[in-house]
Length: 548
Image 1 (cartoon, helix red, strand yellow):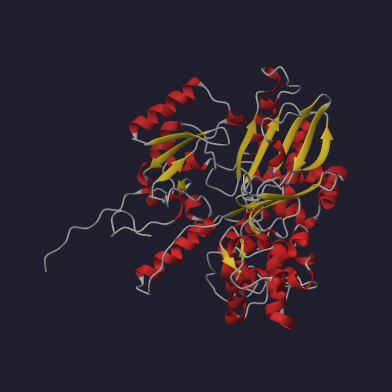
Image 2 (cartoon, helix red, strand yellow):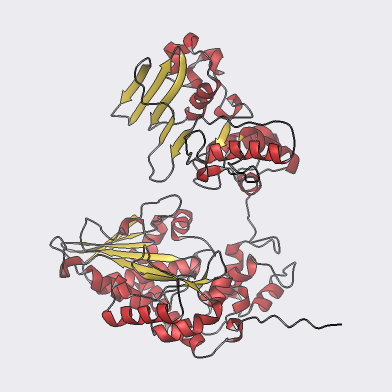
């Protein structure tokens, strides 16, 4: 993997190898093995290229492809098409050898076909059964054995992180792993998109035998305690605990000072349970929340002022431009949440930037309400049936100081065309002819989750109350760093509907508790710019060397 300069090695997507630039993780690992072999003087290694496979992991569609699946002159194609069942398979052969394939709807045999493709062995003897997968090949396909048992150690299990079966088995045996979470932490298998989770569990069951545990009965918050998140939340509420020290004493924490995992969680549970009573502990927050800006890879910070519902004005834009010039901010970028991101701000300049902007914090750094994305709605769009911009601004002004177990994103669309992408937000509101529809627990992250329908309402006031009640339920019962999609999956949508939709008195109480918690919550930028907690922004000046 030497470049034209023998002192420089290169692997991954920056490499054009024999005219091919691979954009996948598997070739990267193959390159890295050759490179490491050379750097360690461990004999001769040579990278001759990769046979690639890809699996779509984002949109909920099962799709796998590998090799030369387009076919052409000199090739044969075997296809299976079942439109009703939503299954399609195409295998491409040349000289009785598999050279490519596409699987849609059912991708369970992707790894098996990929193995045949890489080995390049003849499939003439199993050609008539090849289309139906490994489990249907009789003795040749290890009939009756599960998928994990039929895999060899060098076969890839997790495409996201390039983890093969042998790596997982060795980790299980060497480290005494018994749960899926332990395997994820040790090997990274199944820790990204999750599509290989079932396969990893099969390997774990086979390797760990009787010791296998599909999931711990009780998962402690961290190594500092045996208590779960639910138990800690209950103790804080039932015993009126108001400080981290009190909570740790009462719950008999093993480590008197806690750790980076439990302190932020305890701090949030105290503040969300006893607003205006529990005192915030800044040192129990992550660096972004202590500095009230997003730290970047070079140590500078990102500042995103709030723009209500994504709308702005000439005055705000002029102030932003003046700040960019005054503090020599190198990059200004439009974000996915319809705001402007000022990237490359020096830490010591943060209070001055906030003061000169004169705009509220966008909380882009916090476990809090981030954005309320809107389309232009009925005010301008010829398809709009509701004023989505106004509705979005009302929601954002009501909720913008709201801290939560994790980041929260909202969106309001003025019609079912859904231009604001309300269907993948924590709370999505869609305008219809007769009012508004509310959807909850969507997610646009590494694994996209479509929001679930909660309720249909007539007025904007009802939207504010129902959205607020749902978010307060999440604030009160969600676990720290648990997104709304995982919270709703844990407690069930029916439970959420009972608390937020069917119980009018309980809904009103939830909304009132949220309003009480947010009442008087300061804008952190205004507070810091005025001088509070200013020491952290002072530049560090190295002392002059002293001759001895």
